[in-house]
Image (cartoon, rainbow, N blue to C red):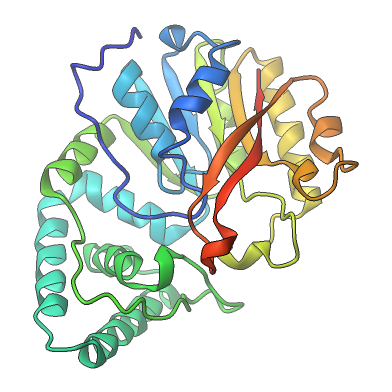
Length: 303
């Protein structure tokens, strides 16, 4: 559908997420537009939803008839489903947990509160709890933990430490309400990206933002799922994009640029040789150390 920025307000991501594309979205759109006419797209599919920055940017601009987001993280999917289906209860829970935290007298008691919520959240993970309360805990931890990270241990439980924030604002009511309205037209799926193959067609656009191929041994610190997305998984994903292209679907895919650490590493250049590969500049904001932040080159594969 044609772009009309006046019909929808700007909606920003409701959580902080490693590798989020909020700032990079316009650059990705512009680069992808060299091959893709977004005004002809009816269905938008994002198989690695994360913070949903690209969904928010493109869907509010082009007003797709249908949207599909999917992620392998059950807590993330539960959050988005609760935003869509139980907004009032979610906002009530967020208001309560925020007031409880902000009214505590010092960081010592706030730290105790954080770890109590984290413990309850992990109990929810262990029993596959899909509820408003679990979504409230998720958003609370995202805004009060260290650097907005989501990381789990080998057991699948959340283990990011306290972020030492004295006051937090967990949500903006208008923004969360607008996000909920956008999600009314969105399928929210839990699982593996292969599920989205059914949506492939000439009027479908897929945006892939998979776990990035690490450039260093320590780069996987922000891993958000128990399984590692290794080189074999990257190859499998590339095969999937070829299958989509054969059905006439359009796609864009982001990943790390191996040339950042090894100019002779042509892993992705070889893997996506049949498609267009562009290198774009991106800011990396989530890092354990400030000196680890800054502009880096990323790959954008388009078809």
